[in-house]
Image (cartoon, rainbow, N blue to C red; front, side, top):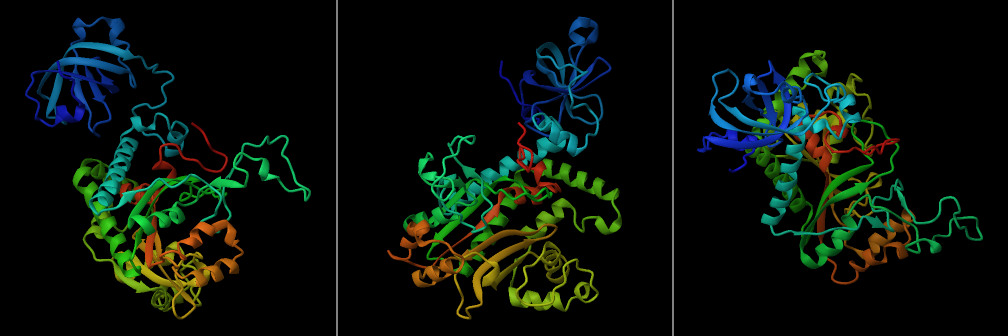
Length: 477
């Protein structure tokens, strides 16, 4: 006998009258109706047992969370809420679940409580939907790059360089922390460490991806990155995943084209393949909004927000033009922005980015040509010597979702920029070599995967879109 998933059974394409299914009990009502779920779909399938012909000891073991094996006939349902159900002929309990201690009961749980039980939270409808969408987005990302001639590169997780120049990195060491060797200056003697030098967990695979782009043409990384930023906000993680394509012979305009096409592709993909999960999360967001003050509610439903991205051309605006718009805007003049825009050169906050997208242009926005002093050293300096060929993509509800740039391909300029922020040439000698041997225009961008999952699911906290969040004072599971 063939075993089916719940998704297959509910597809109404199964011709077999007798079916076999395994899953977990969501609810068991009136000693008769089992709501069974196996993770393949948001929906449960109703399994109807004949309690008169089942031993009482077996009935007592059919509890929320129990794993069961069911054989029965797939028939049209007589009740409301489902089209098909299984008339159970045989049921085996594969794994018991103590109803007194099982934490995921058929009731509403707070997200804080579910984070404390992250190993079981995908047994709920919300988190199963979020994690299926996360999986589909991952697949769509690889599919897009594969279809567009990119090669997948695994950038190192352990690195001796700080790509961002931010310094907020996790140290990697095999030294005995209770007996750390020091040199004559009282500093740690890293020559005795495993790698013979100071090493860290990477904050980005970009620099290594650039080296491969300058030989393979088009590459991308998609892997874990780490940042030791002591931040407990709803938008920060210590461990997160980054997508970072790098392309040789591509300028800033091409970079913006690539990023826009890529984002539209992956969002269209989930709209096509995960609409059931999206509709559930859309309703969840709308129900949540009803309990909020009017000012805090979302301007668009989740699905409207996704189609806002796929159905609109992204507006391209220089940083200088954006500053003028913001400086002269009503919220700025009436001091309704938390951070006032007074002068050129300041870094934009999420409230400014969202105003440009949601109120002013009413479409996704790409800002470009940022002040050099607020962007990374590897971004190409413009002829005005004040701005760099950087670009950020801004989305509704979230602000910046992508950051990228045309890379500085001129050796002398790159050396000057590194010297200005005290990055030793010997630390990045291999990166400088790219500018010595066949240098060329090249560009790329970075997309924080969890930011994309947050946007795509309507979840408000980044800790709820990654299986096991790593945050300050928390490395549970």
